[in-house]
Image 1: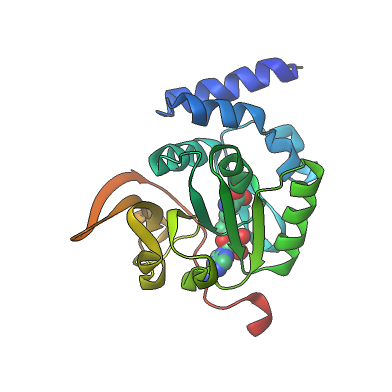
Image 2: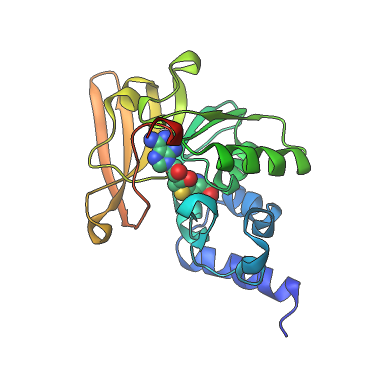
Length: 214
Ligand code: SAH
């Protein structure tokens, strides 16, 4: 059997190989043990570079995708970050090590509760989890320096664009079909928005409303 240290080394190697080279992102991902965010039955696979099922039919993203998105977001220690799609809380935890404050919005109350338990266990105090439809952003805390969306939509939601500061960055998967999603990076400027295509990706869809409303 392969020991934990070797698994972790392979985990970091796969991140570098995929193009995650930012030292701060790599350090944060080394510190955050993905085992805390996956179901017991999948814990053996926690360091594999693969998405894994979590509650409510959702998934914890593939580590290399988390790494590439976090790197593209260029988070600084002064930043207030909004994440749409808390899921397991893994991405939010990595962001919590890089940013000043993280607000993470999720539409399933069970996932909100589970994530809050992990944040408590890990003593993370700069993440706030909110049960709501993240397609509308989080008006009461806007504007944000950075916005990361971890569920796919056809186009970047207008509310999210408007809640980004000038100079702010948003990373979001867009596209309809499973095979045709791409990750894009949007920078808000004085004059409008700059768009940059990053990678092909595959995310669960951004769904309107919270689960109770359906
Ligand atoms: N970032 C997560 C993975 C997210 S999976 C992690 O690190 O584990 C995508 C998540 O987005 C799912 O949990 C899904 O329920 C949530 N989601 C989808 N549509 C949403 C919406 N409109 N508002 C908030 N969350 C949404």
